[in-house]
Amino acid sequence: VVTDVGSVKARVVADVETLIASSGAAFVGSHPMAGGEKSGVLASRSELFQGAVCVVTPTPVTEPNALAKVKLLWQTVGARVLELSPEAHDILVSRSSHLPHIVAAELANYVLAPGRPPEQRELCATGFKSTTRLASGSPEMWRDIALANRAALVRALTAHRDGLADDGEALLQYFVQAKQRRDSLFPPDTANAPIEPCTVRSQSPASAH
Amino acid sequence: VVTDVGSVKARVVADVETLIASSGAAFVGSHPMAGGEKSGVLASRSELFQGAVCVVTPTPVTEPNALAKVKLLWQTVGARVLELSPEAHDILVSRSSHLPHIVAAELANYVLAPGRPPEQRELCATGFKSTTRLASGSPEMWRDIALANRAALVRALTAHRDGLADDGEALLQYFVQAKQRRDSLFPPDTANAPIEPCTVRSQSPASAH
Image (cartoon, rainbow over all chains, first blue to last red; front, side):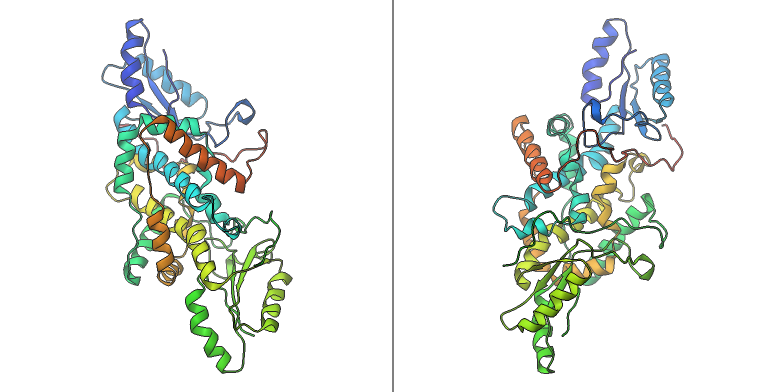
């Protein structure tokens, strides 16, 4: 039984499934949703998959025994298994995973473009740091993901627009909606819980002009 | 001597400076770059301004004594003071602070739009969480900021585009550039430092379809 850990599934599954079946083995695609922006052996963690979602992507020709083995593998290392078709998986992660990466990269490239005044960097605080965190991931991996899931990602980029209403009521509704949708997914801490510090890094010397 | 703590300066300074001067006092605008997505007294912290940048925005008519007092105020609570004109301040923060907020709100609104399949939420991992963190901020405050700094923000939104090259070499350069620019601002930890856990929240029951 063969599986993989790629972030895009439809093309890989279509390419590999028949090939592996023809050699008498069985292929089931996997996408463990865990990892950080660091790579390499020194960045490994034994509890990496604990509590993580792992998507497995059976097709109509997947052998039930092979599927059961791959699911058991992921459950054994602590992951919660979700079954999706390869195509449904690719559409969902193009929104929740690949689109945020493009947005982070675009923001880093734009705000930190060459030629900005030196104060530009000093005004990049923790909000900018969070929003661009994904831009520090592996460029090679993200090139491959963007190429492999290009169709779904372009659909997500096109539908996602950076709009800005011009009246206060519409703007308020826009921000209220964004807050409600995110807070329903990641409930805010109670009011007196410790707050993440939100200060500007202070590496460069104070400058005045 | 009067100051303020607003996130947008040009309009406030223009409106208030003359008014306050006419009453015999002096106004100097301030923008302490510190705070979190929480608000209210229970979210206060005594070390909030330690190491934070605080922009002060003198104009050609600002009294040197008033400017010195306001700078001393911020330095006394631990902030690093940066002097900028109100207009320069507004352009710089439209990129590094206000644009990330719009991007975060747009991403939360789009990915978590009503009608998505239930698995969409389960595939929102820590990458999505970081990129959308700002969307949980105060909608009222962000409405006011978007209205007050609309001109600079629309310029930043227009220049910032969600592009996606269609060949591997161009994509790689795009992601390499984003990583280099961000890493030069927020240096990555050494390879064996602890990594921020990067797992999907696991509130909802496992579902298969």
